[in-house]
Image (cartoon, rainbow, N blue to C red):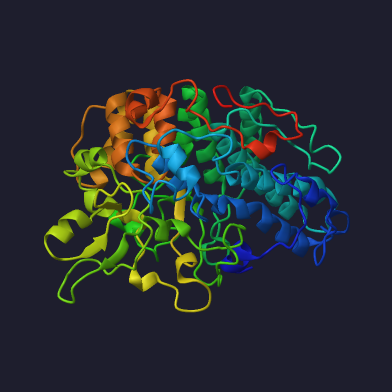
Length: 502
């Protein structure tokens, strides 16, 4: 089972998700597809189904409506950018905290529930599949861990969501009601705790890169505990992931010695990676795939690239293809990080390059001249084969990496020798001296270390800092911490809109 084959097998299933419950979907007869009643007969079919459960994790950086670009836009570190104030109503609305039930991208709801539906279906069918018990145990653990990840994204984004543990049917899909967030978190904890015991400690890089491991489930569980305010539990499980700060942990993870190596496109599944989203340039994705979730490239790359980029032949500036200028960096982040050793890997200062005659570009909406270097496309990575070049970038992205878990454990601990060692390890990697461990120091370190990776907005909400940091962007406390439910999810269902939204 080759890596790309596992990740990119397409599962031609007619699966109804909660986010696809309009009448026309109910009445269409599937053609050229399979039905769950006569599928899942053997290991091969179960493997294809498991690939389908994994597929929505690409939401991190795949498609125009991806988690990283969306969450960056709603933070104090980035503007939406793009071609104008109407270029992507959802990302623009979140950047100014003017989301409504009609402009919130429905895929943030739909795609996650599609993954949950697929996980629920596979979990239901696995006991009767003709395959080895040890494989059933692993597939079950992977499905539960993925279901937990999708629910974690949903409860952070929307808070009040249905908790579905069985596949919806055409007869009951309109009857689903929202669960208390505490119940959703309890199920996430349960799924991850059970998954930990069924997952392998490692996944062979040559054949199974991208599959979840025991350490991945522990890292996600620690993050979930932290968001719930269960700091003692978070610190305990994250310590199992982190091991001795700065050293190799029990699963072979270790901080890369060079921070900038994290963003080398070919450096996939490196020792710092814990949960990583795979992308490929070999998917031949074209514009007919756009918006359907079938494109397998990294869309974030082209989104954050500068528009109409060019450089003189004598220039030493990076050789970039043109992009769409989303997620331009704010002056506030630029000023905060400009003296930090991570500046160069994080910020592409095109403003300075243009002033020096080293490069040129056309400024997009909300242009500052500062671009997100971690994910900038490079000419060497432009797809030259079939499909649209813009949709076939191959850079992977991290959902969780080791520096993140170090800082989460330090936050959970709050103080003490171990918290100090964890903070010191992250700083020492980039040549920074020790500073006394405080919550303020940890907050600053997360901002510098993880800038542009989609964590900042959720961090601000978790810390209770969103209102003060985002008031100038229109943020309203008690409302804008979460998204409104999309209008289509309210029509003909028992779901209720989140407070403060019409």
